[in-house]
Image (cartoon, rainbow, N blue to C red; front, top):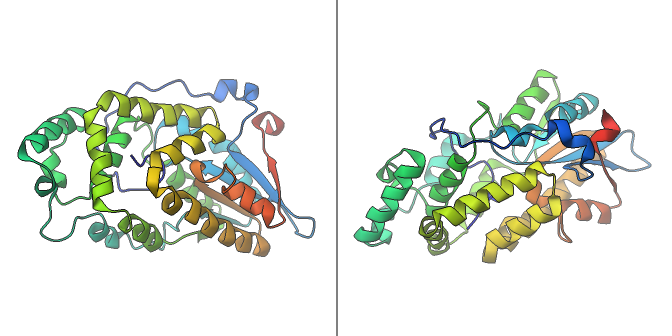
Length: 297
């Protein structure tokens, strides 16, 4: 199962169907010594840059750092997401999200099994699975995960921060390109994606529990557990989805921070661990310091 690893799969087709949200932690954040926001600095550099771990959803729980990150955006010259929303060619995503010509989800599994998972898909999402018959299995899994979480905001956290940076006339950058993310997705074998999708439908209760666990860990700013859960979820694809991308992002963030002060917002699963972006930046000579909310209010 690939959860909170592939970023920004298109979920605009999802209905505004919400599960009961947990209470946001804004009132209790001073008690939390964990953080998703990190200051990146060097003695020979003019100012500080920041790395923020995002969760690519519109669930209200993901927005507890919104104000403090906006403050850091105002202080910096530039803002970067994993890819630049303004320059991304979204029209190229359709082909990448589709199965090879002549292949459908129905053709990959037995009629009996397809009928069974179709029923569960409709019960969970309110949509007909045949609407996505050409879609790669990973898209189905991510659609299921997105519906389990609340759709409290019109835009995801990433989009909200990007729009704010644009309104502040900041330089807007992409650490990766949208095309690079699609290329990564294309490298994941369909059989592996299919297994993840079928595992999801096999135990919807367990799948829901895992999705909500990830949301809770994010709400608690628990980077270590987020990393461990994402690494486990990625399975045999962890090198492709996590480690290789961490190297690429750390290298490019290093270059960006040499040129200007910047806030970089990337998936929280990429920050922690020996091969995480924060450690890779340390190895490049940057001082990495946690920004605790109670230090800023």
